[in-house]
Length: 157
Image (cartoon, rainbow, N blue to C red; front, side):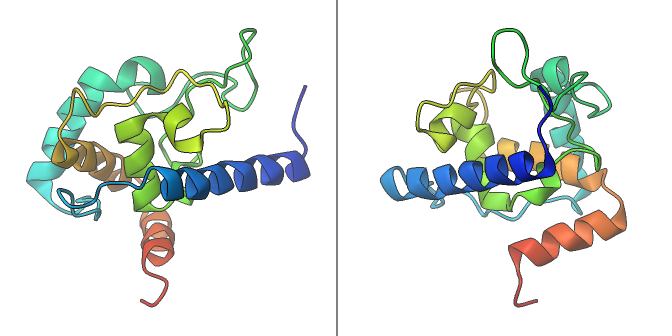
């Protein structure tokens, strides 16, 4: 069953709402992590690329392309891994949400019984390694997408 634009909007609102509720119940620990994605730092991007290949590419694709039909549930009812390039929705989320999902896993962040194949990597990667992976992903986006993402993270400019 395909989602309408309204259905996708409702899903997006539910995910963001779940993130907000979960953040109030289980706040993201930012004491050890500067939540700025280091997309413009070559050493961090290089480490992030290597870690992405090791931990993320098996689901999200070696070229950040995601799984086929990533907008449609699989027979087990779960959503396929989305692309992390500019065709996906990764850049629609602020840094703190991307960090939380990567560290804690989608189900933990969204809560409310949401099920996902996306695990948390808090036992495998340090906060800085998570930021470097996300920085690598962001470094691949076109400049216009990076600007939109930066504006989302700092609307005051």
